[in-house]
Image: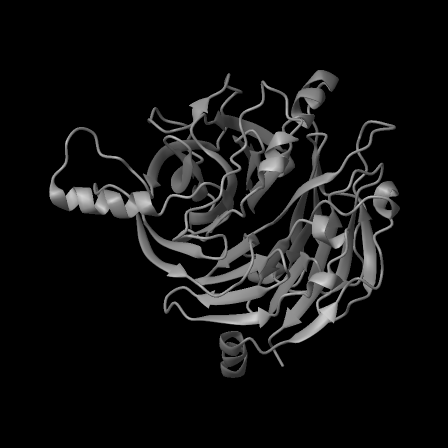
Length: 445
C-alpha cells in the first residue's frame, strides 16, 4: 500500500490500452466518432459502453487485469425496431453482507428511451448473465416519447434506493424494495444547471440516505459559479420542507422520499447594504466566477470546479440552436481562472442549526489545455484535459502530479478530437477515454 501511495504521488504507473477490440454494437461506428464512453470500475471488472445510437446497445466487460473482452452484455430496447443509446451507468454502492461478499455486484444501465436495466455480475465466476435482474420502462408509449427527450445523464445507486438526474435537471427517486422498481418522487429545478455530479451514501442501513448534488449556478449577468444541495431521503415518507426543487405533479409517494434539503453556493450575494469585511469577501467570491463551466464534481466533502474552454465567435455565429432553446454559455473564462485551473471548495453541511457553507480553499494549477472531465472520490481528484493530459491531486494537502503527458497535435486526428472525455478511478487504477482512446493506468506496480 505504501508503494501504491508513492506511485500516486509521483504519477508512476503502467498503461494498458483497451482499443484492440472495437465496439461493433454501433452501426454508425465506422462513419461517426464515439460521442461518449461510459466507464465503470468494479473489484473484478472494467466495464465500458459507447453512447452511439444502436439497435442493440452493449456493455463491454473485461477482467481488471486483462485488456481482452470476456463478455458483451446487450441492452435491447423493449420496443421493436427502436434505435437507442446508453445514456448513463451506475454501480451499486451497497456493501454486500459477508454471506454474499463474493457473489455479485449490481449495475444499472440507462437507455435514451427512458427505460433501464439492472444486471447482477458475479465476482467469482466468468459467467455473466445476459438477462437483467430488474427492468423498468415507462408505462405508455407517449410516456416513453416524453422521456426520450430528457435522458438520464447521472445516476446514484445504493440498493434499494436508486436516484437519477436527467439532462432537464429532473431528479427521480426509485425504490427497489421487494424486487419491484417503483418511482416514488420526482423533483425539478429552475435555478440549477449542468454540468453536475451526485454522490449517494447511507446514513443508517436501509432507513435514511444522503444525496449530495453539485451543479452550475448562474451569476448575474452572464457568469457561472458552483452550488451544492444536500437531500435527505428516508423511508418514512416525505415531509413539508422548502428546497430548490419544485415538485412536479406527484406520483404516489412510496417509502422513499425527500424529507429535508439544504443548499450552499460559492457566490451568494447578501441582500441590502454590507460592511467592509463582507464587501471584501464578496469581491473575492465575485473574482472566482467564470464564463463557462466544463465540469464539476463532488464526493460529499470536496467540490471541484473546472472552468470551460472559450468558444470562438464563429462558433457562436454558426450555431443552429432554435431561438426557443435556453442560451448556451459560450464565453471565455476570467484571466485569473483559466480553463486549465481548477477551483477547490470545502463543502460543510453541519448537523446543527448553522447554515451550510461552500468555502473556497485553493486553486489547483498544473495541466495545460482545457479540462474535459473530472473524477473525485475519497479526497483525491483526477482531471482529464482535451489534449490527453491527466493530473492527480491530493485535496487535503494540495499536491498534484502529472500522470499522462499531452498528446502531440499531429497525433490528434479529426476523429479523436471529437471524442468527449471520460475519466474514473479507484484505489489502484485510472481509466480514461479521450484522444488516446480507452486506457487503464495501474499504480500497483
